[in-house]
Image (tube, rainbow, N blue to C red; front, side, top):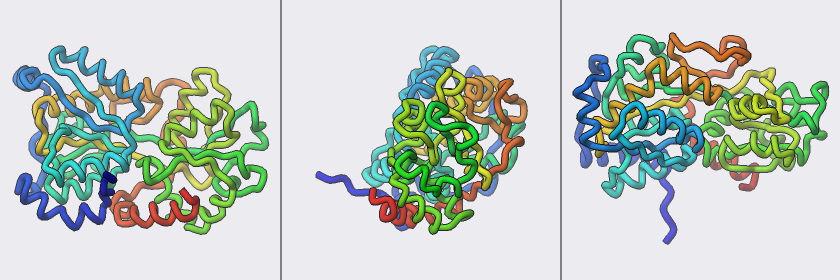
Length: 354
């Protein structure tokens, strides 16, 4: 049997009924008081024994993060269900519509997902102390429903064995040069929240006309934003049209023949919030994880290990890596993207025939 697709339009239409059926929890006027990690919270989490996290974080990263959490809090296991953010959004919608509540917490690479979840009353308000003290307001929900756990970029990149530095594209406009026809790889916005976010920002800055021209360049289409860096390092394509910049940075540091390019128009910026569902089967373990994830120690560890960025005021960049303040960036607009997401999926699929 074919599974029905769950779109944002479905979410908005059904949110009121689902919220009433599941929780009937009103939206809060303000965030609850910040909470610290206490012995009482740790004991309650150990009694529950586990947390189920849905996440778009790369599997190796998620595994290392999970092991660090389990080492910090023995007796609390973490199960990470990894997929592209757009697929996770559909999965949550399908599960909730069937009254299935298996997920405790979720980290998405599409910040706009939290808009309908919050409107539906599906999220649990919880503010870790570090989030309240060290996170800029723009990176935390005013009602305490979620916080930005990581920030990263979508960039251009090239294989240094196949492209000379002087010949490498310097902008998105350069990718339209005929010399790159049949030599590029990029991700898909219907699967990846990173690519959805990047596509929205690029459409806003460059227009659909840009993507129409890019679609004529015989671009290799992959799903996840983690795939283009891998294809590039293997030499399967010479240029990456979009994908995780941090993947390129890590591959370069490991000695692979890749080089990131921060496009002249600005690099699309992606934030990955994490929130807890009000229906979480393991709410205390979820609170513990949310608090631990946003501590300075965990954020520093995560940033150093993944080459992503943290908005925690006490976290510093690893020597030799770029800082966000050094770069020209495109700006996020989760609300605008949420309104345009279905159009992006439809028009993109038609242009690239995927």
